[in-house]
Amino acid sequence: MPDQPSEQPNVAYNWHPAVHAEHFDEALYYILIRLHEPLHRPVAQQVRDLLDLADIKYACAYPLFGWADALLRVWLTPHSYERLVDILDDETKHNVEKYKGFAATQISYLWHAKGENMLRSSKEIQTGIAANTADIEKVASDPECIDCDEWRRLKDAELLFLRPPMPEGGVKFYTCLTRTSESLPQEHELEAIKLAMDSTPAGGSGVPMSERASLYCGEGPLTTYMVRCVADSFDDILALAESFDIHLKTTTLRPETLLVANPGAVYESDFVNDPLHLSHSDTNTARRLDFPPKVLATLRTQDRPQLNDLVVEACEMTKDDPSQRELVLEILRTSALDDRKGFPASLSFLLEFEPKFTEFLKRELGKRFGPDWLDRIREICEESEGWHDHAQGEMSVKLPEWTLGTWATTAAAMASLDNEFRGRLDTILGPGWDKELQSFKDLRNDLSHGRVHVLQRYDVYELPMTEFLRRAMKAAVFAKKTRK
Image (cartoon, rainbow, N blue to C red; front, side, top):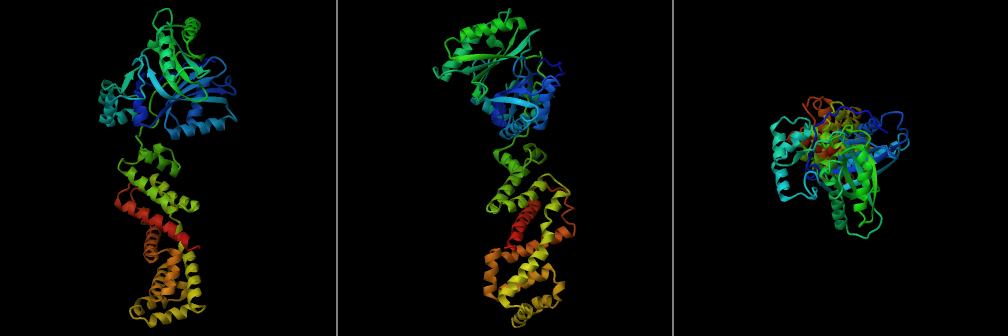
């Protein structure tokens, strides 16, 4: 069903596919969509709503004549593609009746570079990408600004290029070519498709189809190959499709024409959806922290590797306890988001620890020194040089008034004076528990006295902050041990 044309906000240019694939880790997807109720709202708006749900800004949305209502063309990272598929699956209950996908593995912009697979970039293009990283990221982050030196340098380096203008009255269409047998190798099929396009005029102008076409080879239930082209007019479509089919007679490819219903695709764009150049480690960090990769764009470039290392450490120290992992990752998640309320809240276990540790230590002291453990450990301290002034002084306070510091001193004193008691605590809490307990107490005091709240930012991973986070992560794991 045709849509009303919409204002095109973007400049008509394409990135070299290798920039999408090699620099931004994006793949090109085509998705054919049939909606439940295409007549009640414009098709393009319904597709735009789906993209908004998946947090995808840039795509080409082609409303179609025929059984399917829209063809979506979009560059996505693996994470973004999974998010879009999840939305489409959810929407099959409401707005989407059916969809089929296609992921391009070879791309030839025949109107720009004859026959070249532009996903397999040349050494010159690879060198150009490496030499122009800053320009690429600048233009990708502000794609509609073409009046800048960065854009012009990328154009000169052929890392982006202008799309050819459509002929007046021109009509876009896609042809899906589905293999019906395995009679020809892929390279022979591709050559046959290109030859058929060279031999098929795009209309009365006599311009061969190949001069206005893009050819995609790929994978997915939608088709085997896709051809995008522009005919001179609607009147030329049937003759063009017939001629193209006739010239494909040496193959076993069955064509299906998808006729675009509006002259200018609404929201048409070849822009990068995730302009931040993220490494695979960054993507894994975003997945583990359960937020979109673009959140990492708020971090300084030098901070992302530090956060990645912290996430890896968090997963390693909690690999045997999924619930503990979530507690530790929440500390890093709220830190990366610079969440002024959430970050201190993620450390609330520090304030909840004292009564739990108190009960734990009472239990362990009772097991070792009997029901009158307090009198017994005071006697042991009185008999031991070096502990009388400090430990006995701490223990002279009435038991109900003991603080976490008192309990920590008592635990350290008795572990020093009684090997069996130390062995018991080493088994439960791990070697070096006395230092961890002291660090825990200091962190608890920082939080309770408001020193955490006055940090300027939680997402700047310089040494003081990374040290604080590592201590907090260890403290979260330590707190769990006292519950065994």
